[in-house]
Image (cartoon, rainbow, N blue to C red):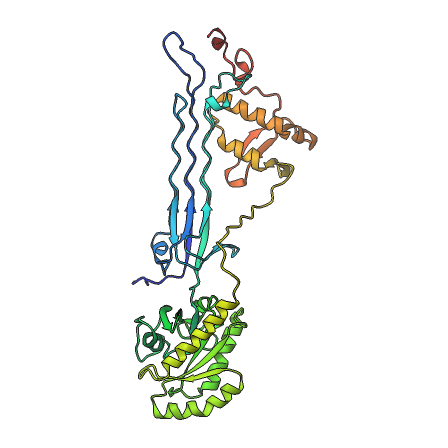
Length: 453
């Protein structure tokens, strides 16, 4: 099955790069075999960044390849050598792309060339044992693991950025009109729904240059899913003005310019958000004798509604100059009324963090610990290393997790889970358990062999 080249909505699965692991290393040189820890930190994982590229007009690239991942950070090395950071993955999107969660929440509206947004951050690199050393922990025999990067699914939705939007029934002549007024060459044929994708054209009228977009034909019920119009109604949301293109030469029974206008206005009202856009009405195909008579008949009534009406023919180019200057005046008025353009600012609204740092709840037979810090510490811990597990226990005790479990009635042997259900670490509650690091001679993280250096 052929895949269309114009795609205006895709679901994208992105993943930031994982952070590199910290290194466990001891400095060695002649006559000094234990010169102290010198393991370097791991590099940060690359982030996935969305960036507006003004020359793009479709999201087709992400339709064919919806899974994107940034590079991982490199692990640290001995001699205090830090791992290299992973390269960011920059995904270029068209101007006017709206980024949503799969639940419909708007994350950002990307408008303006160069606007960027970090959609999946890379994970932090783990600390090497050199960074973990302290006056009390002179020889850490472990390092922290790198954190995984963010993983999420997002929806990219394109809304064309145009000054004037052409709306009307199928075969009303919108494609012919945009082809006659600009250098755009959309597909034109004598059957309905010829236009399957929006087309953009650049029009110059005097000193004003503006863009015109034709929206695939709307029919009654388009806002509820009938026809193709519901797929593209979003593309008129950014238009400064709307131009109703009405077919005065249609032979379909029950149709006339006034009823066509009422139907399209009803669909625009059902879509919502377009009430403030100025309108003009184009009575098209007046090169046909009967269409000319019909246009002259309905023009006074349309003018009585306060609408600017133009009789044009896309075939003979009659009336197109006047129409282009009228569009230019509307665009100039909207541009003059708009506030001065300011550089796009990315406003980051982080989710609220529980001031208590962590919570402990009873879920059936399991005590579940949730919190930003304890969950992060668990991800950084190498559970195959007893000293690393002991370091985690020290951190949790200092945070007050053990005390809170006691106060809530946790008993020795109860199951305690840290993290979400899908990736939690479960262990038995035993506040006096020896992790293995206590069996060392001296405080955890010390090594008596270093005392004689």
